[in-house]
Image (cartoon, rainbow, N blue to C red):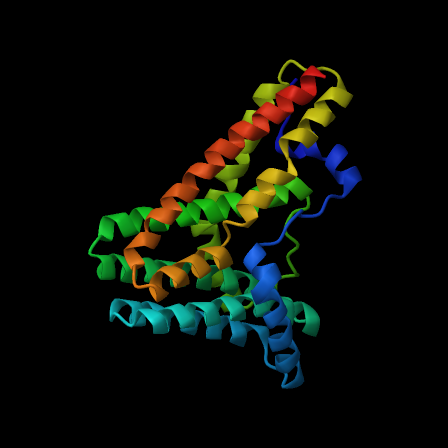
Length: 276
């Protein structure tokens, strides 16, 4: 029996209508409540959401410059400001009814630019450019897996507003298609192939559905959620504040191994569900 990620999930998961099971702890405990206060203030003065995205990008790039210049505590504070604004921009868009495709692409690509600048600065500050490059690739990989595994868990594709057709929106869409779309396809294709291998000889639809539900388990999504960008920047801020920027470079490399172990965990759960 050959099963793709789409047809394997469309029955049982769609009926359950599962939501993402967890938020990042640092967001739930700190950045989320503060972002809510920021959003209320911004709504009162009618600040457009893209302006908040540009502000968080400016804070992140300024943090990279400060880091390269050795102003570690200042850089750490700017990173937390960037994270606060990053959590506020989407909430502001939803609260003001101004969710746009342009804003979605701008937010994602601004994060990528800031991350690249930060790792260049880290490589310079630590005198380890190749380690910084490896850490940047590891962070990008972990964030991509986090997003796609979360979407597959819910089996609800990311909801995009209607395109406006503006030249800037089309340009950002092309950048997204070049940089992010291949990552999305690769993660989803791997997930689908591994599930296909488990369900290849299974003919019973009920057993197949149970194994699929087990494969897309909440623990995997919850762990990956807490490797998200807010957590990464909070950890970087701590390393900068205590004066050891080079320590952070090893953290993403360790995080990059977790999706591999989680994949084995998911497959074990699916096989166990089939054996019942």
